Amino acid sequence: MSIDSVEVRGLGKRYGLHRALHAVDLDLQAGGVCALLGPNGAGKSTLLGILSSIVRPSAGGVRYLADGQPVEAGESLRREIGVVAHDSFLYSGLTALENLDFWGQLYQVENLADRSKELLRTVGLDEKAWERTAGTYSRGMVQRLSVARTMLHDPSVLLLDEPFTGLDRGGAQALAEALSGAVKRGAVVLVITHDLESIAGITTHVAVLRRGKLEFEERRAAGYSFDELKDTYHTHSE
Image (cartoon, rainbow, N blue to C red; front, side, top):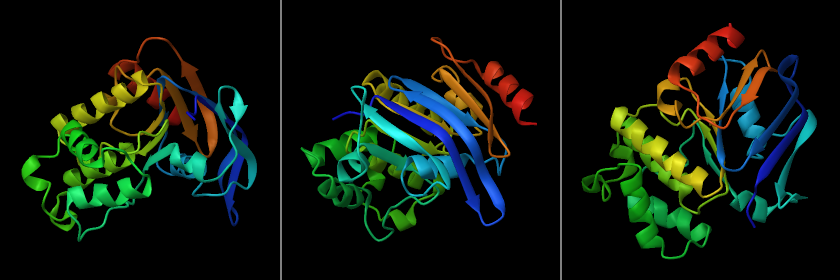
């Protein structure tokens, strides 16, 4: 099974009296990168949490589709989703390879050792760090390993919340290239980021949240330039 589209309809979320999301409709398609933009507190992380099934909505819902047919919630659906969140979901006492081995066994990844090394090279984590415990890593190194963990089981949906945080330009470029590779393989990719330079050129779909509402949405065949992303952000989120 491979998820090829995601439908968000009438999505709302309240935390007590605070309305985090209100009546959000959004369609995500395989083979493209959607940049979810907006100021702090706009509801972006809440939306990603609902899409990843970590957060329950107060209204509306999300449908994952494979070959046009809805996929029921459960283990098979969760296996198709890879998430980079504020929590890295890494174990600080384990090395990079041990962390990937742990998660790879949970997902029953084939050729796990080779897959782990391939991904660590893809995200640009220096081989000298592979046998060091994650607790000794810098923020950028943790982020690289977190991305490798997310992509380890080759999910068909990637949900990334500020994945470029802590990365230098080389790391950001390596991540952008990894996302482009996932898109070419037919993945659905949603990225929350303030680093517009890193997603310029690979983003074909832009959605802007403001105060929990979808203020703007547009998709195109060609990627958005940095200037176009910057103008879109400032026009619709301020």
